[in-house]
Length: 314
Image (cartoon, rainbow, N blue to C red):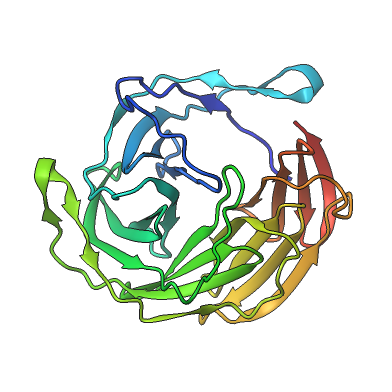
């Protein structure tokens, strides 16, 4: 079981994002990078065509409980905040993913805008491991023939995930749309990162090397969240999806991306309730533990593989 060691909240400075964009249905525009000593974290926020970063302390503290066992967060001061020096999109960013690599020497920051324009940055750790510097910046266009009728999703859907090759020469991009998952192979050759006006980074256009629909049991309703989680052994990864009715499907993938194990879990109401946004998260300590959040039911269901463990009411 997962237990909160601390719960923090912070206020985004009004001077940082002067005109926040509302986003559209399916937008996922928040990502975290936690320091190795867990003393602080960088929060990435996408708004409009840009990305912003905030440094927030994460000192461990007693977690208070309010009515019905709801946890009470501690207000933290924002230590630092600025706009990321990166090539902006030409339309509003809809999804953003920050993926840690197996070696932990760098991470991948990917964003996709409302027209399917994809920009991927390879970030390494510099200085004391708190600041990140782009080593390459790539963009690619999703083939129109791959996803003929993209689905809009609902509020805060997460439908983008990345898997970087061990030699860092390429990455697989997973995109969920409708009831299916699609994969794109994009090269990541390291190149000089050019700068444009005001120091904004200029991405290199990469050709999509391969793209196809994943041969996997489809959902019966629209996928709302998708998570690709690396395991400690690095021999396999976990791909999980949850649809608008809370139906969970998890696949265990080997290093080639082939499925070795797949299981599904029906929602507690057997899918007869109201549809809406649903979120998914794997436990970093135990790959078999997953939590599914549903907006309409206002619940979080915890599973150990296909066994329901408990339900938390929010």
